[in-house]
Image (cartoon, rainbow, N blue to C red; front, side):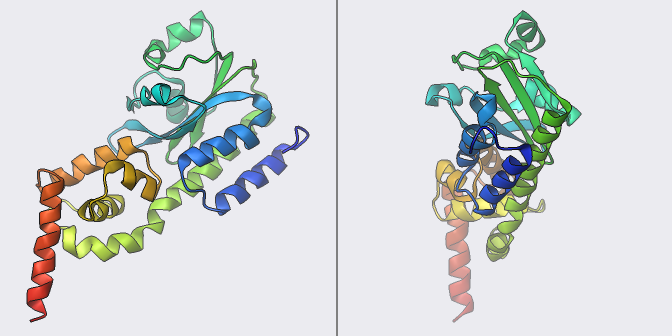
Length: 251
């Protein structure tokens, strides 16, 4: 995309990209850095989802080394980070790499990102979470830029919020077999439980349904608690039991 591209053209291009159903949030993050926000010279991007427990979990990213990205842990929405500020206020947050930034966000020192950056932007991705990007330029927030960032975040949020509903059919296909507890599983948990039964690990499940391994790990723990089982072997036992019951019912 040329540097002369207007915001409208970039918004349209991002919308077209999402319509092609990218395979992962990492792929989305790369497109945002390399295309949508190319003029801002962002070095890296972090996409996070705010889950029901009030924790922001990694969805994907681009521009981080594996060691740097592994340091991006789950953070409480009440902690002071640019991305949590953005989600709480539902507004774009601009910050600069200076002593005031370190004073305002001391917890950011826990991340391992060593790249040089001058300014950062946090953008709400309503209704699922937010994104944080760090640039080699000193960025400014003009009214038109704020509208541009908010629009991109809204497009991503709309796309991401529809992903679980695309899995409803899969969820319904396994619901009767695994929805055993008094506390029902969510649609996403039903899909994850079905994949657990099939022997998928957390990383494979994340790739399959487009969520971070960290989020899958948290959902897996919640599933075990709701199903009152101790782990994957117990999940496999549930599957075996259901298959036996189906076989007996056919006799």
